[in-house]
Length: 111
Length: 111
Image 1 (cartoon, helix red, strand yellow):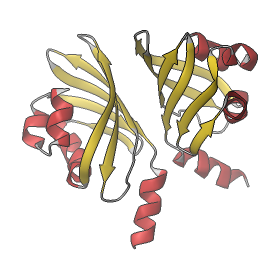
Image 2 (image 1 turned 180 degrees about the horizontal axis):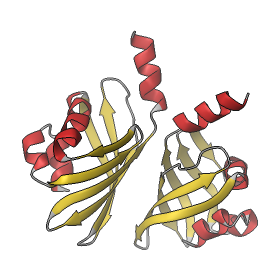
Image 3 (image 1 turned 45 degrees about the horizontal axis):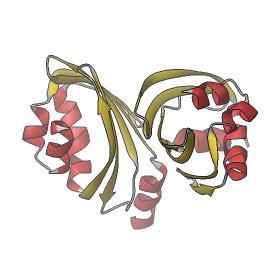
């Protein structure tokens, strides 16, 4: 939740304090390894975010699941889910699921 | 979980016993209302399913979240998330998130 609040608040420095150096993120666009790559992946998305509604959050000491509806300048509703694996208080793995289709359509429409 | 096991086992009759008549499902393709429409929406997906790995499941009496990786004849890995709202033991609302992109690409490739 601290990670979610930080990045949706566009505070990427703070967000990355919750992320392990060797994070592995499986995203629709592919696999990202390492906190620097992960930050570069998330930053543009955070930048175009206007707000985000948290739909649900569950978790225990090792695993957390968030579903949220981010509103962006490109796509108004982009329901997303993330499953985090946490070790020593940091995210070591993230499985990110969202539908790329409306983003691709919006990008095509603006170019 | 009973719903998940039923539909991934391709037992749509059994799966629908866990679904309320007036279910509302928000899927990437749009909003589906009513159990008949929902069944028609899920059946083709169940049909092309070869197996499904459950990634995580959390919930309480009212809300459940599942993340799973369905393997289908069309797309090998299609990580998906569902947030269910349950009332009187039946699913009254489902928010379904998955990436349509690989499905659309596979359909284009086969036609």
